[in-house]
Amino acid sequence: MKNTTKTLATLAAMLFACMMVNATSAQAYISATGYLINYPGGGVKCATPEGNSTANGTALTFWDCTGSDIQKWYVEDGFIRNLSSGKCVTPRGNAYATNGAVLTLWDCGSYRNAAQTFSVGDRVDLRTNTFTTYGNKCITGYGNGTSNGTYMTLWSCASNVPATQNWGMYY
Image (tube, rainbow, N blue to C red; front, side):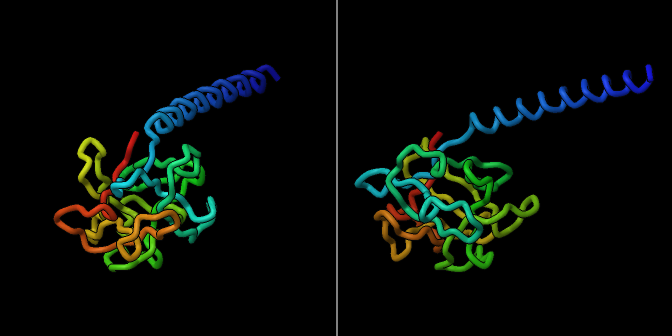
């Protein structure tokens, strides 16, 4: 009985220590969340899942920034993850090298999954873009649009960083 009590106490202490480590890790990534934003010239737009949905396959759209958690993202190992769902920005059909591929939310794959790995622009430089690491396609508004509801797609990166491709993280 004495050994059982001692073993249970040891297990409880180990469980508590693990919970504390996980709590610290969660706080670290939460403090690095921000907005995946676009500067189209007339104002700021945020990457927003259509209908504020968190389901796999939900298209990502341009939308006025509201400050809601559904518009918050964080970058981890090249993945752009949505704070509300934990899901990754993913081109529909994993078409990371295809012009016109619509960006969606999807469960994150393995480390350096080609379809879900992005090089993310830094908002220190206001003329920057965010592109697929392996396909070299930039996040672009469908039809070069920037208005609310415009689908986020992939397209060949332009050298002058047009408004529709001016995407980066803002922390």
